[in-house]
Image 1 (cartoon, helix red, strand yellow):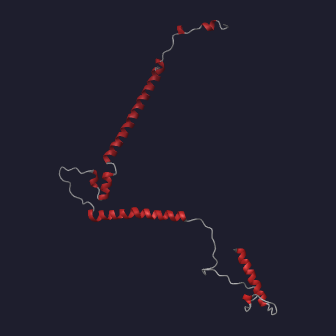
Image 2 (cartoon, one colour; image 1 turned 60 degrees about the horizontal axis):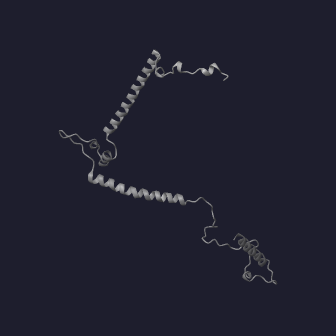
Image 3 (spheres, rainbow, N blue to C red; image 1 turned 180 degrees about the vertical axis):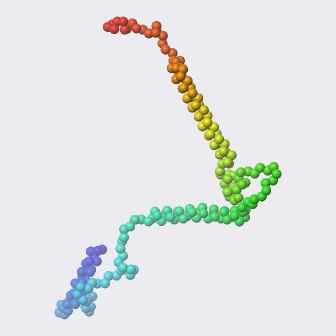
Amino acid sequence: MAAMSLLLRAAAAWAARRAASGAAGRPSLPGLAGAARLPGTLAPVRYSSGHGKRMFIIKATSFYDTRFLNLLRFYVFLTGIPVALFITYVNIFIGEAELAEIPEGYVPEYWEYYKHPITRWIARYVFDPPEKGYEQQMALLDVEAKKAELRLMEMEARRLMRHRGDGPWYHYPSPDKNLVDNSMKSTPDN
């Protein structure tokens, strides 16, 4: 493509020089018979869109970026629009709770202290009740207190074993000296 373009430019320049030199007796090219050209001018080159020479620019692909943004937009709208409609419905038709006196003998549930209905629903069905968290924390503290008590008892037992000179090694059975066979030591050369 580039070689053909150079060849055409060279041919056009040669024909223009030949026509401009005024060679009357010599035959000229049929397409350039009446066209007088200046020396060094080139044949016009047509750029199809009129915006200059079209270049092939190598750049990184944007396919995956565009695909990610399109999918992100799709899923945000897929979840965002129904959630926004649901929240609007709850705010318009249900509304927030109003503060009122507690009736005699009624013990309210823990989730009834929240003002917004969506917050009440989340506190009731998603999160654990505060009593459960309190009991879990108390059980953990009880386990740690029992561990500390066992450590103190073990330290006291070790202190007493060191002080009295007894311990688990005192209860290991040792063989009787009469059961030891020393005959091989009396005659080592046999």
